[in-house]
Image (cartoon, rainbow, N blue to C red):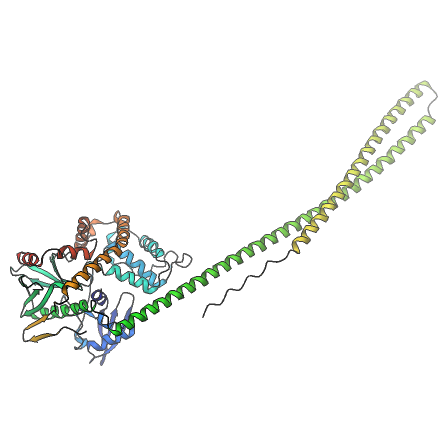
Length: 555
């Protein structure tokens, strides 16, 4: 883990800025920084400045790594920075790239909020390797959709938690934290030596993902070199030494330096914590507890705020409902008043019509009496008169019936008017009741937010050796196995997530754009050999050290 973390920190460019200074760009997982260095600065000066800037206290776990002439090396603390440069490449499967991107977004933007993080908010972010983007027939929007889907699942994780999850995924990449060196065995076969926090590994030059042989640090007793020949002595003295040749003496020096650093971290992690480390762990626990309490406080405040907002919304809804009811009652009152006025007007008209009909009936009666008084003496005139009298009687009867009907209609209209006015009175009473209803009790206001000792080694001429103590190697071996089992149990869920995403995007892959590493990774996945970096190493180390040495010499 420590060696893997150290490889996160690297230079990306080095350029002269002024005659007496130059600029160094440092790239970490989530930051990119530039430092102005003096020409006389040594590696320790720059390393101390970077640690102070990042707030690192466990400085023994970290370092600055660079590449020089295709050889990976660590920045030497006692040499000038100006004479050292670097570059770094690590293969990452597409599904792991998407998951890493989702944790990077969580660390940068915090919890996912659909109202804030709308489509296109990652358009300017460079989250995926170009190799992965070119390998699939997927648009940037499709990649963003998949990253956002996992980003939404990380809700509630603080920035440091998201970064730690990022590192847990990154450290299990096959090439992560591994430094490769070109070597030859006794037969002259070209191979690669990989050095990392777990031990030494031998690779085929065409396959940097899966080692052919591995030697954990707890099985190595001594490492030395003479000229271009490098010698590794196993802990079991009955087993022959493991030898290989490098192309240059300088490469052997780099290999030995890297072995010493990784073995020192290996031993430090398994020693009792120093007083300083114990204090730092206690402070870390206190800080973690403080942050947990702060998150709980913020969660409670957020819950109270959401409840207050819901109560406010409910009150606003009820107020709006009351306003609507008042408006409807007012409209009903207005309609009642209009109906009452209309009925009053109609009643008045009907009453006038009844009076007019009564007057006409009286006039008809008078006409009938006059006709009778002035009847013609002659029979014909009398007959005609009788007929006219009969007609006048019929007409008077009809007029009387019509007058009576009109009078009844007027009475009915008066009754309707009285009912309309009664309805008007009830509407006014209801409006008065609505407008005088008691208001809801005030909501309590939302409370305001609270506010090593490095193992000694001798460098003499062209030969250098380094001896490891073997007193606790068996105990360390058991601890390593225990850590690996615990790690595999924790990473089971993560592997299921990666497999799920891989299945989703597999149909969109462009086979013709696969690189050699992509093909190797897929073959290993099909064989079940790359489900875990630690599993691979474990399978290789199950072989006896003697058989591994013999296998190396036969390559």
